[in-house]
Length: 553
Image (tube, rainbow, N blue to C red; front, side, top):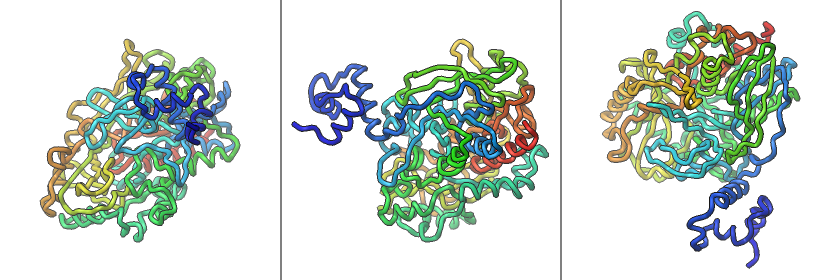
């Protein structure tokens, strides 16, 4: 029997695969198929993902042993730092533990939520999805890291572009009163409002959902959501979004493979519907010729050797195996690995004595941003899919905690047959906080979070959801399957651990260590004021890096 083109491509990607192995991998029934050797299973898995996304397997060169500026992480803070440093004429090396994923209007590059595979999660074999269902998949370098700690599960990006690839695209500026309650006089809200929030909006082309898209079939659930909250007496506010509305229109016209219009987002949008950092800040940084990005580079530790900063780096294959390990040095080190990643590196460095002057505030002030998942059901029936972009939100300051509810979709729901309406809740919680500690026995930094740490946020979400349900004859939750409010021990908005004005000065300079900076969500004290954190993280990064460059460090 002749090989198919797919067989030939698999064989060319991995010559050790013959026709018989390909048939076994496709499910041909033999006893050996049922119990493949670990080596064979690994070869087949690698071949499968090489066929789907060959780009992430391309060899990555070794970074320079020394670079003046080294950035750890390529999410919002890292991408902004890299671009502005490069524009200022400085050489920059960006290390990213995840891989660089392509975009294409017709290819199925990323996994979905319904039946996730190895492209979905970062080096784990199973995960509890937002619907509460546990799924199993290949151990592989997917784009979303689901990190487990006692009493808390944190979702965060693990790819070039970081959280911009895997979030739902909502970017909202907090109200002045909430911002000032968080930052006091350490950061001027007027300056942020005048200069840095607008700068980010322009770079990311943030806009509310156009009327023609809002009226389209995949956004039926958004219109129902708006109708429900208005019946409950709330006024809706449009959400600014990072989504490229023209790509959404292409999906609606059949000019692109459906992605955002069929509820894909948590593991990326294959057609580039999300205007993520790969399409703006990172692309512009590389275009200067002074910034280079190195995917597959995981930083294990950071140190000061007396004259320069050093990082201990593992270069990983997408399968997870170690390819190389080496140390790199720099004059200025920018931590932008996210609240979890940057905090872990600092806490470990203090515990091991590789950074000796870190103060007692390092590792403190962590919060979940009061995030919850909110569900109602049995309202209306539609055969439409639930599109990803969020159209609107409401805000209620009277539920114990100031509380925002955003129009959302139900991840993993192929069509709207179950009449489930999803929302994302964000409470302004200034009280419940966790901290990081280092365990020398496991060489692991642990996030310590109270078992009921999100209880106040859950209570606020329940109150708002029940008010809407009562006004619309709908049912909180989905009986027997999904609770009305979940997220007691989960967040996709990790914040804090190196809080601005405490662990750092008012510009992100780490106290006691000149040339060491924090440029991400670790700076923010556990909340961004009842809104999604990405816009504030980005605006703070723009503010801080401008000041650092202007003042020579």
